[in-house]
Image (cartoon, rainbow, N blue to C red):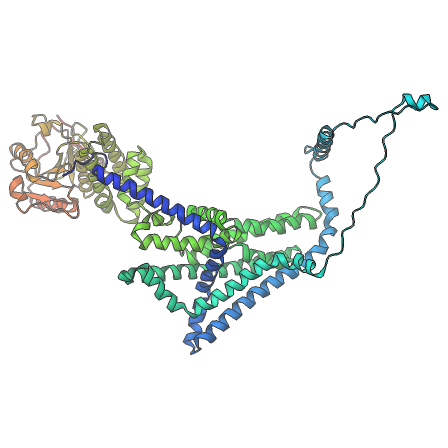
Length: 640
């Protein structure tokens, strides 16, 4: 068997295979991006058609439920949808045509505002300086004129001594020939041919996709993986539902916000309010930047229309207030998480698709990226897409908590612990987060990548976190501290088995016991009690719990239990193997091998054992030499 590297736990061959796989994946992604870029003329209409079919498919299904034929349902849906789009475009064009003749009327207001700007902004000086610099630059670039050759004349000596005047240039006027009808048609219609051709192609593709929806689905299922129909069908359904729900919800929200802004602009007096409301409906499909672009035009018009600044202030206030209400109240309730994309992923996707396909890519960025997210969730080879783009946490709570401890950030770890405890409970935090974190730390320590000083840091961080969680309970790592008397039913001693991580686990158990009103003491591995010294006596302890997260071997715990038997012959000894994973189990003879009275693999099991013993225990004394008193909220021990 090949030797495994301690840093990764894998063999060199496995590491080489993983690096080759990563390289092939990177090259494949590069090839896909290149294909998307160079084939954009074909892929953009197809992508538009697919997304529009997702948007129109619910309407087709409703008409089918009303007993309409497939062709009729598709024809009616497509006709109504594209008539609505063309009507929208016609209204926008009409509003723009009405706005054009009005713009020269606002020139006086603009000039007055420029003159009213503070004198601290020397606009005229800057403009004149720029004009002078431009003139000097042009003059320096003009080559000097060559002097004209002087030709001596016998009759005029003075004329021979002076330079000849340069000849004046003759004015030349170039007349363009009249354009033929074919050239006029080419000039006017030419720029419109490509958008019209794309629109026609999109309409045809939408019709055929809706007509052959089931047939196309079956073919995609065959190509994607007929051997796993369940996963492929689930992925296709999820993608269609996410995109369809997103587009419909976004359209509804945009229509509501555009209507509100249009009415508001009309009320406050901004011209062509209907145009700006429609612009909001269209541009809000662009993530984050759309509403900013939509607000720019009416705000610029407000500056030109109003001699003062009040109209600009009201326009900006209208956009800000409406967007805040819609973005923070309406959208989260209507379709929160409908795409499953994180905010950063939405921004990065907008940049990527805009670079790839231009403005149309910006409009399609969110639904296309949502489809990639679905692929990442259902295709194992594309899981990285789900990790990079999704909004769901990619680390479990214990992984996040461990990362905070490794980053030496106990404050953030404490905050995470408090949030988890508020949502669930402190006991669940200890079982589901704290103990798995200690198990991870011990695994890293066994591999040699977690030095002893880091184990000490983690233990100290746990002490601070537990102090914050149990505000009234006091947790001590060592018995050489101030003490208070245990309750009449006795006390519990939690002893760490080998290292600082075992001690941290013992602190967790002691804190839970103290929260129940029990007296609990924590001994470090090198404490006098663990070493067998006579300074602190364990013979009066009702229960001694040996905390072991550093080993799951019952044989290794046996010699510690023997020493505890000599020190505490009347105490019930419980061995806790906290590092046992969900798929692991102790051998059936673990209890006999350790020689303990009980064996537990979770803190809740250990607490049940301790509570059972404490309920039946007779009143016992405090540890020998202890200074006994009862402070409010906890019990601590001072060694004599």
